[in-house]
Length: 119
Image 1 (cartoon, rainbow, N blue to C red):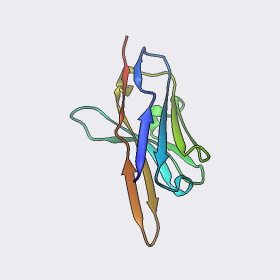
Image 2 (cartoon, rainbow, N blue to C red):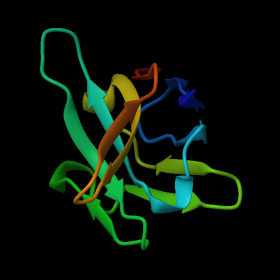
Image 3 (cartoon, one colour):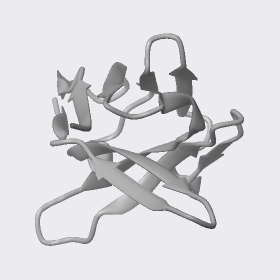
């Protein structure tokens, strides 16, 4: 049974920081590309950042220079360090795991963790 469990969300003031974690089980974590997405009510889920199995990272423009995605394959965990948070970063943040080969395409999602940036 595959599980992705996010943690670390909460309420933070503008300019503050949070570190999200996503612990994976039931998959060979090291071969999966991992990602963080976010969603606000009434809007589509949007990509925030991804980190490939090989370690290459990608960020959407709105978070470049403020967020850092990383992974620890020994702990089966992916992180999102969020600094200089803005009210528009408020959303439910979801962790995803994706693996694709010629034989298989697998995608899994966590349950989400709420991040609220407000004074």
